[in-house]
Image (cartoon, rainbow, N blue to C red):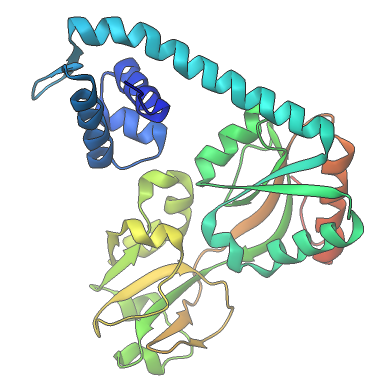
Length: 302
């Protein structure tokens, strides 16, 4: 009987947390999906792993015994991943860079990657895609070398090269009354429901970006899909969505318009690295960011 090792690691995480919600957050996956995965493992094993009640979950006797081995599998996987990264780094000039999925539409990210490839042709980049809090933890642990990051960060722990700042743009259907505006003011949105990304992905960034809108009396609706970026289609004439103003001006899409909000708070988009000593290839990427974005004394290194 062969078991998917990912199921074992997911089970071990639930067993450690004694909570599907906490384990799902740690694994960065939806709680219903995690529950389905654990039930799949139980069906495969032929015995229950947990005793579930309305208030808590506990390991069964067999689940507790299985947990001991599951922890060893998780540790072995972590060790294997770390060894693979080290061996790969020994045979190639490998740079590991983190980035949130939606940052692929930011010119400064693309320009930095292109500049680095042009000036360091014998190096190889591994792009680690994930959400900001996960990337920060990987940067902290040294799993990745640098990371593009939206929002503020701990300057005692990380050094940041600010590449640009972004405000908010509203995406509306072309038939919406607001579509005729070149600029939207918060008063235009009072009482309206605005789709935004889920706060739990990055509470500090969410508060910096959206809390001022909430204070204006705008109704914020958290939509998981908004984490991927602003929608390019609006089939509902009344729908509104708020995301970073990557385009810096009114943009026409096939079925929608993207219009900036006046006086919205802007947040920094930066390249981050750990404070302290840096390897040569990381320094080369940092230099590429400086060169490709036309960094000047008006920009900030935190």
